[in-house]
Every structure is written in C-alpha cells, then in structure tokens.
Image (cartoon, rainbow, N blue to C red):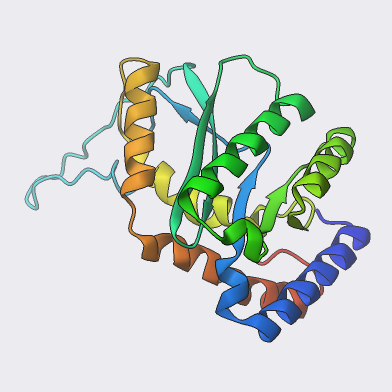
Length: 230
C-alpha cells in the first residue's frame, strides 16, 4: 500500500510531467528515454498464459481435458532494457548471480550514453529526459552524481509504482505474453530470442508506450497520487 508520503510524491511527479507535456507536447515525449536499474527476469522455461492454456474438447464430449502442471526451470537471466519512442536503445543481459550496484549501473549508463550517440544523433544536445527507477538510496546518490556529469534531465518514477513505469506496463507485459509457453535450451538461445523480439517491434509500439504516460499521470493526479491500476 502506498503511504500518504508516496501519494504526495506521486502527485508532484504527475503535476510536473503534465505541465511539461502541456508546454512542449510531443517534443517532450520524444525526448524521453526510459529504463530501470533493475529490470526483469526472463527464463528458459515459460508458463503458458491463461489464453494459451485453454483446452477445448469436442462439443459432444462430456470429458473435461486435464492439463498437466508445468515444472518451471530455475534457469533465468536478468535483462535491462532502455528505449524511447522510436525503439530499443540498449539491451543488456546480466551475468547470473551478479549484484546490481552503483558501479554496475554506472557502466550500464555509459553504454546507454554511447548507444544514444550512435542511434539518436542530436538527442543528447537537444535535452534527453531520463525516466528511470533507481530504488536503492545509496546507489541513487552515486548515480545522481554520474547523471549530473552527463547533464541529463532526470525524471524519477514515483516510488513503488510500476503502473507508472513504461517498461512494466507496456514493454515487459507484451514480452512476457510472447514468451508464454516457450522453452529455450540455453542462455544464448534465450538471449537471441528476447533480443530479436525487442528489436522487431514496430516503432508505433514504443511510441504508444511512452504516450500512455500522459493519461496515466493525469489519472494519478486525479486519484490523489494513488495507483492507476489496482
């Protein structure tokens, strides 16, 4: 549950976001690069979604089909993804067992900086807006120092609010649906499949994910800073 402090913080973020959007419109949205210090897990063996697991018998049959429970593999990888309204900027798979700390995130941000220089010429000079979630307080201080050196405009996600993080409500929701029911033999096969899916999505998919922030922040403000999705 969000505390009153969290809700107040969320309202402040919503007001700032909407104010900037109403001033600059699509220009503001096109400057946003989003991603997190800790992203999501992808696994070698993936459970089917509810729709995929539906089994239909013959219309004349009274026998109900049974579906065996799946034994999910513990083999998994953490993937960090940064993207904007045009598409993917950086995909980084973390070594199994790696600790995500300020040093690791600093290296990721350096890679992101190079990726933006190569793929989005002019974005760094025009004013990049980094929308990210850096939850750890101590690492957030160190990360903030790095970002100030980069001279990036940083916009934090409201605390404990995945419903305001485009990677959570747009990108990974679709990716996990696509992964449903799939099995991968090893890390490389999993990495290649996830990378291909991320890069093969149309630009409109990514633009829509960033654009949804406008309605979500508006709803957050009207909800008094409470969750947009419950």
